[in-house]
Image (cartoon, rainbow, N blue to C red; front, side, top):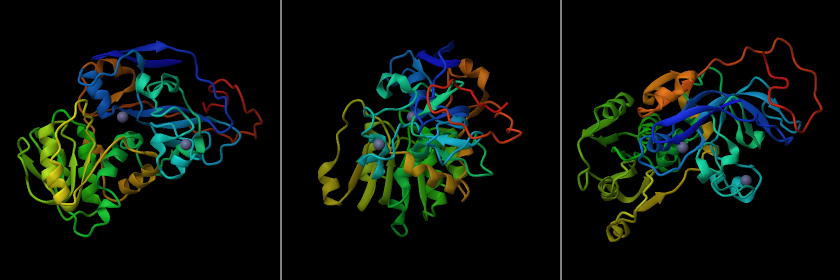
Length: 366
Ligand SMILES: [Zn+2]
Ligand SMILES: [Zn+2]
């Protein structure tokens, strides 16, 4: 099959690789049809984040199920599903507690499409087929009426934004939200956070950045925008979010966190910024940073898409699947690669008993 391989800054290439094989009865084989770039992908492609190629590319997307093992009960061939970027079994102690990014059944940080950091064996979503080892635990059926292109980032970046502004943070009555953006941070995550905070009913959402395009998206979501570099402080907000990727932006978010407020950072800092710890202590300020546990949040963000949150506002470009290499040479904030889904099957398949070592596409809809 064809798999897009990332080689380095701005460099990707389609390569022929062996077809993945469904070997476990709890697994599924899926065909991605709408795949988004993650903020981290864009960082790697622009040479800002040190993730060494070559590796199979793509870890956010909606796919069509093409084959399932005999133990799979929640999805069937032909279904459209959101595929979480993190591999999770659903049964271990961390998974049962919702910490699916730290599933104990696989090496820590097992993910699709993130090179040696995520484990190369899982492959990437820019491929003809992807194996999902725990279909019932991982796959989330796409609700009717939602366009796969709109929610291609529901695998990762949208839930990552959700954990910075969603419950329990949004349960605080009247909690206003500040999101601090910037060139070095996970820009789409911050903008998804803005859109979801508005849809969740925050009385005021403020987005600070200097980039006209990002300010325009935040404004379209209904946020008040502040154009400029992060000052020391912009107010006192119960919920603050740092997606700036800069020490100044992080300091601004922390200094702008109200008494008993919570600041979440979705930025990845490769060196340690200084934190205003005494001031945070005095204000009983909580600071949260870390990888998101995406699987439990995916149904919640899909609900919000039906409830006033339009993630398509964040998408910079929708690009044909076959044009991926040129589009990724100098990628904008968020690309969604799209290709047609297969036609529905004309008739139901008879029950099958095969449960191991099948080639992909056996029983594939035509
Ligand atoms: Zn990602
Ligand atoms: Zn697990």
